Figure 1: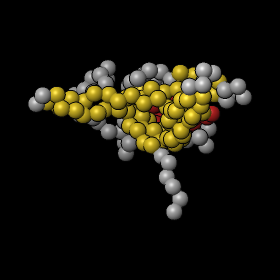
Figure 2: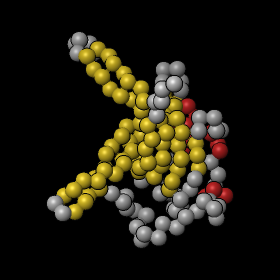
Figure 3: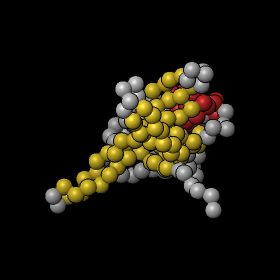
Figure 4: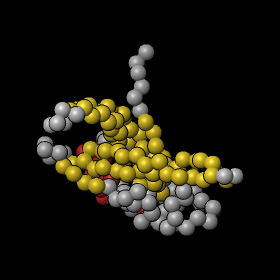
Amino acid sequence: MNGLNKAYFIGHLGRDPEPRTTPGGTTLVRLSLATPHARKDGENWVDTPDWHRLTAFGKTAESLLRNAHKGDMIAVESVVRPNRWTDKDGQAHYEVNLYVERVLWISQKRRQTSVVATEVAPEVAVGAALPVEEEVSEEVALSSGDGASEDEIPF
């Protein structure tokens, strides 16, 4: 059997994507994604955010730069890559990197949509995002009906 190395997240962007460029000229973005974590506080359950740092490259990164904004709710499929290195002082370091492979927009705060199923995969052309009027169909648009304000992150 082959192994499986995937991590899936659904959460809100904590800030706009941070653009960078590799020495080879490839565009990359760093994302800060908040996912809710329920914990008991006395007699009540409270949602507190767990923060995840993700990196996207190439066309996915370019699409995120154009379309993603703080507060947007997205679903992310990523691959997990460990990274070990020794710094100039001889200190060993270890970190786990999460590299975005696919993104599904659940809601886009700046566009004022309820639910938008717009998938951004590496093989999709950069300009594939459609205007809001064409993106939201009757089958896809769902009313949240929970009374939450567009300015509130629900946790």
